[in-house]
Amino acid sequence: MTDATNRRDMLKGAAIVGAAAATPALAQGSGQGPANPPPAPFADPQTKYTKQPFPEQRQKWPALQRDMTPVPDCGERSYRGSGKLQGRRALVTGGDSGIGRAAVIAFSREGADVAINYYPSEEADAQDVAKLLRGEGRKVVLIPGDLTRQDFCVDLPTRAARELGGLDILVNNAAYQQSKASIADISFDQFDRTMKTNLYAMFYITKTAVPMMKPGSAIINTTSVNSVNPGEELLDYATTKAGIAIFTKGLAKQLAKQGIRVNGVAPGPIWTPLQVAGGQLPGTMGQFGQDTPLGRAGQPAELAPLYVALASGELSYTDGSIFGANGGTGTI
Ligand code: NAD
Ligand code: MG
Image (tube, rainbow, N blue to C red):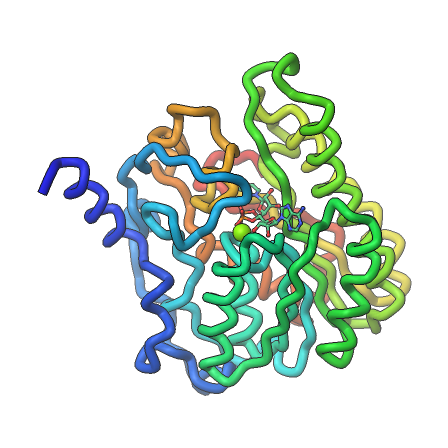
């Protein structure tokens, strides 16, 4: 075994590999969870997941999670539900992989039926998560389609509500991120695609979904630490993330009168396909997340409880707020 393969194997072992998660012994049963679920194991957050620098890697956009080294941990084997979202109907964009997949797994195990949107070439990742959750007896609806298309975005909530019998939770989570060192390197097409995916789609989908949502429903938008402290190589992306944060706060004021809460999650560096599909500058993968106070990148599974809490009625007075998960940077 070469040093390189040895290191790769160690990294694969360090993050929990999702593909093995569908084994019946590890499945979560009906999704309602046990009456008294055991608490998450007491663990040092510095070492709970791998601290090893990630190996340099690049995939064609939008990248598949199943082909990453190590495979991100979306809670396939760890998330335990306790009926917090029993009977809810959720639509999650970008739910095939990364943070969206972690939210989908958690929602499903909390008792929700879930519709997942993703780009058509991500079918393999979407099938992986659908197979896992359907194997646990849960309803999962797959709606592939391109969010840069206005007609698709406007149709998406209607299709999800038709399949699920209604809509109570909307998670606008899909995004396009390409790192470029200089404004000179950002093409007009890239700028346009970043705006369309991250801002326009959120607007079209939300505008269509709101009339379907009853009091008690929740909208959660994924923003970023870049919304307040932009990485200089993420000029267009950071601009959209600031827009998402303001949209979240403004819409919360409007929809409070309808009993619909709108909140946001602002992740720091999280190990997901977005990063290996052009999200980081070439040659920088090994530094990803290393400069946080916790000394490592986050895994998607570590964000899932935030999405569950914001979706559930328990946080009924939390509205128009943004919650960080950034390894201690203090950004949000
Ligand atoms: P990810 O690649 O797993 O998820 C992004 C998803 O966006 C893709 O899976 C894809 O399904 C979807 N998408 C992009 N363009 C699309 C299109 N045209 N049509 C349909 N779907 C499209 O990566 P992730 O990091 O989990 O990203 C989820 C969210 O988290 C994004 O909003 C991202 O900006 C945000 N975020 C991520 C990080 C991080 O470090 N990973 C940090 C801050 C914020
Ligand atoms: Mg994906």
